[in-house]
Length: 130
Image 1: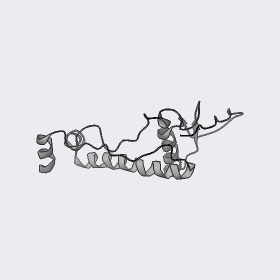
Image 2 (image 1 turned 90 degrees about the vertical axis):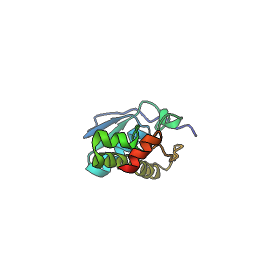
Image 3 (image 1 turned 60 degrees about the horizontal axis):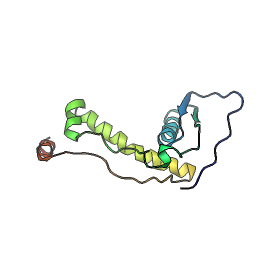
Image 4 (image 1 turned 60 degrees about the vertical axis):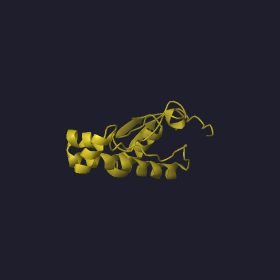
């Protein structure tokens, strides 16, 4: 990954409806999502270089799915809400790819799965039965 120039300090007064702290993948995706879905004026404040912190190394990621087996998500949130939550996670990757196209830098992005359906055979059977 190439080093990015540090942005110039803000000068003067600025107005925004929403301020996002951090210009990593998550912060930029959040800002783009707010801008595109709500039309709000969004400002991103980054202390260092855009995309160079955890997002620029190996820690920044956008998960696909929840951190628990799907059957537990259904039990906890209900079938419709569990499905909606999973869809939101999947859509996060679509939004992130759109952001990458806008900024013209892939930032090391790789789409990888992370959705846990079941940890063992009994959970898989519960899922199949549902």
